[in-house]
Image 1 (cartoon, rainbow, N blue to C red):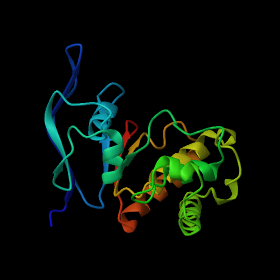
Image 2 (image 1 turned 45 degrees about the vertical axis):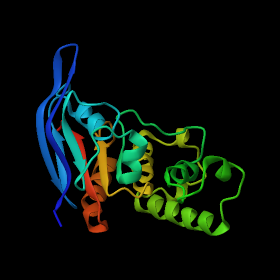
Image 3 (image 1 turned 30 degrees about the vertical axis):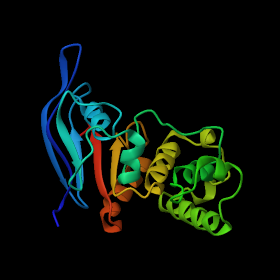
Image 4 (image 1 turned 135 degrees about the horizontal axis):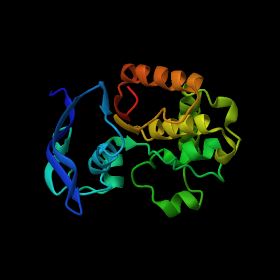
Length: 212
């Protein structure tokens, strides 16, 4: 089995004639931690948007575990096993910490949205999802914040919640857009410690950073 889990070849994307991503080749091996580094405006987030389906490349292709995902939609890519965070935290601020993580957990195959809304999800699945959500909240140190509204958390805690939501998807590849930007030094160190531990859990991490 190839050790390469995510691959980009000849990836190019231009906006109004300006190439934000110019002939990029990238090969990420399983359970690696890879940093995409560069100054603001270098095209790092554009590369992430291409790999996760939020943009379509002008040329080139993207493969995940050997499958061409170049033209897949973001939800399809997430279900395959690539999840991401964003620079702007995309949490549901009016919902609790626990509810945010529960929403990130994929529904079991065959269960539709309306079935979940109507309460037909099995009690066993609810217990399993609750346990899984709590495990990831404990992993990021937010197990005592489960009933707090996401919007009431500090910025650093919201960053940690975003990481927990990303992990809750069950994805093998986590693409984290500036996971430590704007947080205080103590939280910065905590987040980096969590990232270092993820390969031992079978995760591959690709993250953006411009502060070497």
